[in-house]
Length: 88
Image (cartoon, rainbow, N blue to C red):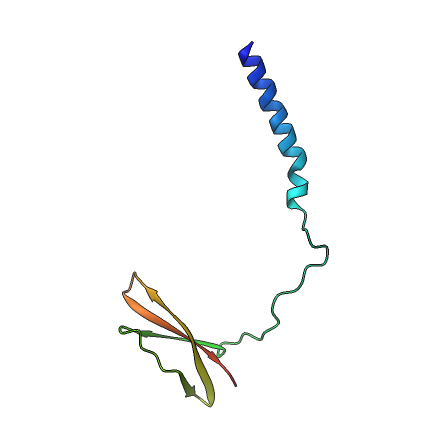
């Protein structure tokens, strides 16, 4: 008798889960917004490595000015990585 109740309960739970799946898959926004239209080129972002984590505020390379945005630490290589974005 207990096995029959367990199987019946499991079957009903599975049926409810399957019937609700399309509701979870639907987008809440019928008109999704497009992502950023910012132009990402090869020269837009530059990365530099440093053992000390000290980076310049800005620099110019091939006539393009880059400004410091953020830094992150790479634990595998034991170095800091500075990220720069072009402003020209």
